[in-house]
Length: 129
Image 1: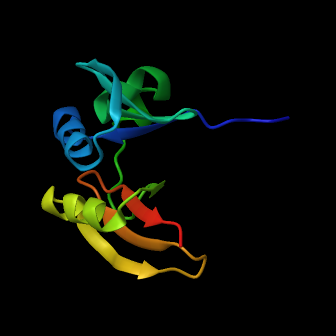
Image 2: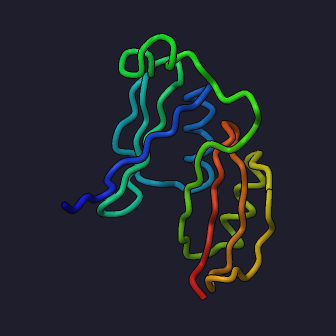
């Protein structure tokens, strides 16, 4: 069996804030922009969606849909190759992302920096060496 990742959806506390952040930092092509969901095309095969946490109850159920991480542990990491990692890192910082690991050459060869967005998701931005 073969599977292709086509869509990653992040559950966010404030959709407008999250969309403003992702617009300012990355400028991805926005393919859906409605009051309850925003979606971006990352490349030909991948999209990133943003959905308000409170809207997850209809498919997660009331109990699970109401739960939120409380221990501060990141819930997911999005690893993005970008053309200019220094510029994107500066945009992340300027838009309120917290740097958790500054730009450095990593063991796997990439130059990468790690940030945490407003909803606690880890955003790694990298350039191939």
